[in-house]
Length: 289
Image (cartoon, rainbow, N blue to C red; front, side, top):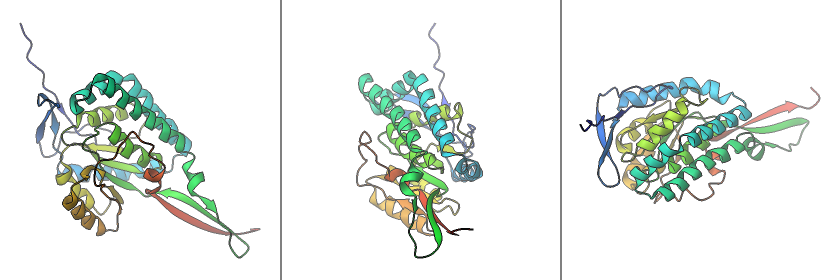
């Protein structure tokens, strides 16, 4: 006798746990051919607020960890992803309509990107900090510090590599993240959240909301306890990007502007994805005291 399909409803990832949406709503997720895959929670305003609270609570502990320890944790995420490679490949094949060979390459690139950022964790401070010459008997030292809570609207097309490419630089530099996944392709993001939950990432450092960036984005852009917002996920939607920038201006958020089109995530990202989320603290100290 044929089995009845067990249809799964994926939950949100907030504070290291997997709660259902406060709204009680979900939406259907289909593969690239239009075939039903699963249900995903539809994040509400309350869910976004809860995620920001969880992120803020985690910020103090995460930002004060040594850069070396953060590198170890990013590398551990890559290790767990490698162990769950078949699940990621399947999710990318079904979500993005890629061939298995191409999906394997995408998963390779996502894992390699995490390792790459892990390597930068204890080096970015050396590159962006400095000892400054001054006209007086003082040491003058500039050092980078994380900005705080970062809202990220993840790419809509590249549901795994693009997601990793916008989340990894934020947590590498000591920031904490509330990320809104691709609306039509959320399953790689939820699978990534399951990896985070079973690795060494403290609860609240990365929070994953599924739903529409057009709906959740304005709540995050206007939230007074969000310090920066990455608008990559609304690439090409100039009207929405403008509205989100205006909302973000109310508390002087840092804004990474939406590109005209989604970038090619397979290229070398450089250090800009990390440096835009750093603030510089300069300390003066008298020489000889």
